[in-house]
Amino acid sequence: MAEEVKLFGMWASSYNLRIELALKLKGMPYEYIEEDLSNKSNVLLQLNSVHEKIPVLVHNGKPIMESLVILEYIDETWKNNPLLPQDPYERATARFWAKFIDEKIQPTARNVNLAEGKEQEEAVEECCQQLKRLENELKGKSFFGSDTVGYLDIAALVIAFWFEVVREVVGLELVTEERFPILCKWIGKLQNIDAVNECAAVNECRPPKEEHFNNIRTRFEAAKADSK
Ligand SMILES: N[C@@H](CCC(=O)N[C@@H](CS)C(=O)NCC(=O)O)C(=O)O
Image (cartoon, rainbow, N blue to C red):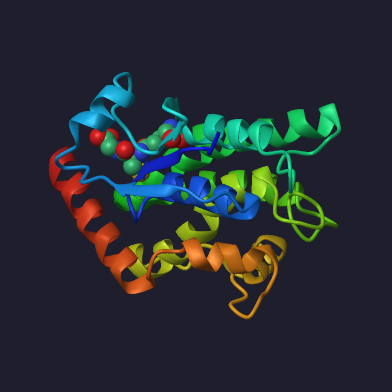
């Protein structure tokens, strides 16, 4: 039976990007359905009635939600080019750091983006400490997945893109080579546009920079207006 793989996403979402990248690394063709998040389709609302969010992967009619869960599903379903490490301890460690990114770094990064004055300064300090912890995980390795892009690289991609957002949109020089040499080297490798290996897939999935920054600017302004 031919497989049916559909992805409900939004072009500027880094969660969506995780799934696109994983499917590309697996060489799995899929149908992409762009959602307007200000006017979500009934199909999306039915598929993910709990969170009403993208991304949703639909495999042979069955929906899978939450980007990290979807990544594991993809890895277990299509066994070529494994994303998670084979060793149970290393798998657990990769999952631990992915959770750390989503539950700790992302909320702090949100405060860096949206807070002002002293509150923003505190968020910057906290974020730098969290990023240092993550950076330690990369010591002595090319990628979090060791020699190749793996599950944790995909989960952490959101950070690679956020570094530029902070500089271009928020106007903070937060992540410098001096502060985070290992993370910066990793980002450089991922963004090597001449790469022919899995890093080429990263660039294929990446939204066009200017449009992406403009989209983020608009979202930040709306979020700030909402909180006032
Ligand atoms: N924890 C979720 C987060 C997904 C998420 O926040 N999606 C956003 C787009 S980036 C969304 O659909 N937002 C619509 C809404 O909140 O109404 C995941 O990892 O998939």
